[in-house]
Amino acid sequence: MNSQQIYETSHMISNENLDVRTITMGISLLDCIDSDSTVACQKIYDKITTNAKDLVKVGQQIEAEYGIPIANKRVTVAPISLIAATSQDHDYVKYAKTLDKAAKTLGIDFIGRYSALVQKGYQTGDRTLIASLPEALAETDFVCASVNVGSTRSGINMDVVAQMGQLVGTVGAERLGVQFGIVDLSLAPTAAAGDSVAEVLEEIGVAQVGTHGTTAALAMLNDAVKKGGIMACSHVSGLSGAFIPVSEDAGMIKAVNAGTLNISKLEAMTAVCSVGLDMIAIPGDTPKETISAMIADEAAIGMINNKTTAVRVIPAPGKKVGDTVEFGGLLGYAPVMAVNKAASTAMINRGGLIPAPIHSFKN
Image 1: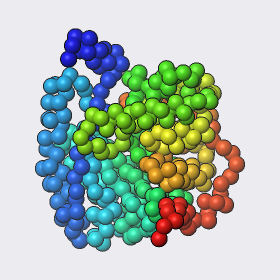
Image 2: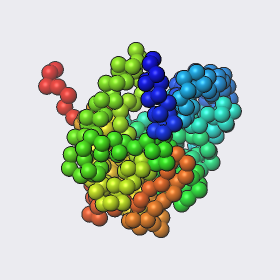
Image 3: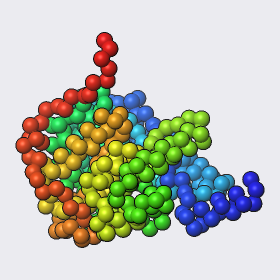
Image 4: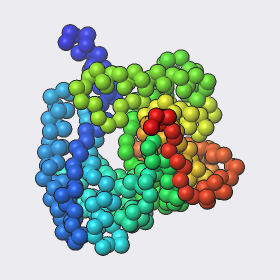
């Protein structure tokens, strides 16, 4: 490296908050399955704390060697609904507490997947895990939860979509110290860090995020990030691309407050970025069916485009459009955004399945 390259790297770290957003260790827990949940939880704790015992230390060594901070050290495991299904328990909160205990022992920032995979339909373990989400997330500090409601091959499970609209307003209310809850607590650029996807898009040439041309600029940025990731790695895994979390991006917040960015435009942008509707605060009186319909829309975008999409919307009781909700830390803050007032109740109450799209006419 020449002196100019060294200077540019130093400038990015000190002034532009360049960092590695996360390092994540994946651990299979399939060999921890046991009909006795107490035994299973002990196996889970032992395996996680043994396999990931050096994760934080190695992360710190990497930070010291390359001089680039790593914002988060994380562990992800096999979906707990699969692991816990063989037990006769009617409540899986003890599994969430086990994950949380392991995370605290390791000193990591987050642990997932307190999750259910229901794109092909409910199993007993899935129902139990989903029902436990409010309590599990309220009583843990580092656990991430998610529910996979659809896939390109299986379609969208609308029964679960309807249920999640109700749960999104109740889960994890105590986790962030405010009267609302979210399911997924994964991270992206923070509003405080100055690391703004919105500002990058504005450098490309749109006056402010949300105006016409924003989706095209985001598609180009997302493609460039993915190509860069492929060039830099011999093994590519996880999500590589542009993330657009509203609460964690100062430029996005500015655009919402200016009125140029709304949920409809964000939804269009999710067709070309790496995630879905991300860290968006909405009025606390938003009907649960409307939240379910937002989930369904994003799942449909993901299914049709063969890409991962998700929904992290945050109903904020007592808050109206234009108010601000403070989350603190890397989660930032969010202006409460307007949602469409027209009802989606009849569609959501139909339940059933949105079938997978046609992939080929060949047989």
